[in-house]
Length: 355
Image (cartoon, rainbow, N blue to C red; front, side, top):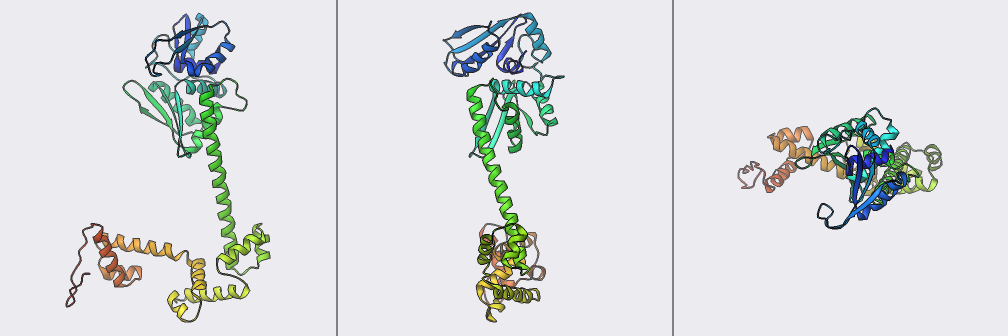
């Protein structure tokens, strides 16, 4: 039997033993019309008085008689009668068969969403036996999933990873797929388009960061603009722009940065260098090239101080270990106290202040 149709029967169909049928609300009748193209001898019926999960929309059912079909369906894990607890995932079939089958099953009983146009979620509701079998198969293909209880009698298989959802969509909807439910296909293509966009944007960002890192490293070594451009395969404009953003205009400025960095390595502070006559901006750039962004370093030091305070370390131990002044530690103690932490603030003798 056609694997896509088998998937539909497994999710939204019924194996009666001498006939099988598939029912769906009238909004998704396009898939049933395609199934009738495969099996032209099927009959169609419509129920207008309905009240189920589809609301009151008319339900279209297609039916095909044949014992041999029903026996084949059993081989694919679809038992006769009620399949709520006994439906199983097909075994001993090819991966090509299973991708077609999974597309039909997903279109019948699956869901796909993408939160904030960025974070996807793929889910299928079925029996625990089916979910466990599907989890094993897609896991073999490198796709991580989880199975959880979904209501009283059902379970759901879910995939949340971006790459996992991408591989499922690409596997189910290969190029020029003719047999598909248009509504689910549209959702899948929207999701895939968004995932491709963010992947391309991330790759461009990584390439840009790598290029900038290489240029900054070469600038720090005193290389010329042309040499850097040739080394990192970047344009002269890009190299010059980054040099300018670092406060480096020409060779003399580059030498001055190296001079400042040498003094920083020997223990000079930024404040002392500025008092010595170096410009504030070039001192900042030299420090950033050598040690990193001072704002981020300050935030890290503040976090380390607070961590030691919360751990119960005394002021002298903190100042010794983190090379900071007592006033800074006292300031952080007051800050933590204002946030509601149980911090001991001792009075300073003869002053009346708090430490």
